[in-house]
Length: 129
Image (cartoon, rainbow, N blue to C red; front, top):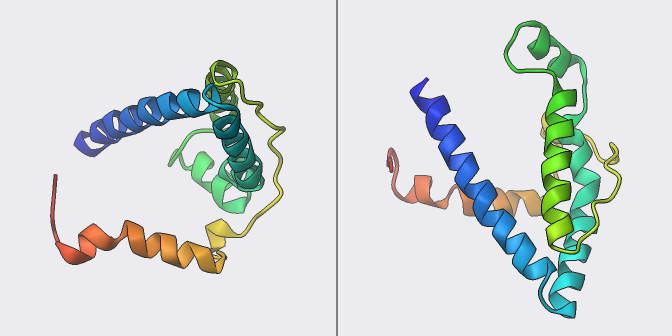
């Protein structure tokens, strides 16, 4: 329970922080709005896999490892749409366009991103904060 409570606090913080930046940049200058719109369009093809069902997710739902994905998607979409509306940004239709991430099939760029994300743990093993 301790880790799940910490996860809720962490994700809530990141959601609030990133939402403010989305609103600030989306509702900022014409250029910042255009760049945010471009980023949304570039990332949208990957979002569908977060909420797609496959044999693995169905098994996990049956075993109560995690909840049904449909209601989570609906809540996510409502929250993101609210933020995007405040930011003068459009939420595109989310469909499953790219798949393979759950199977470890990633682009070359993912390796560089993963390396950056692992920097602290590799530099300071067994750290906690």
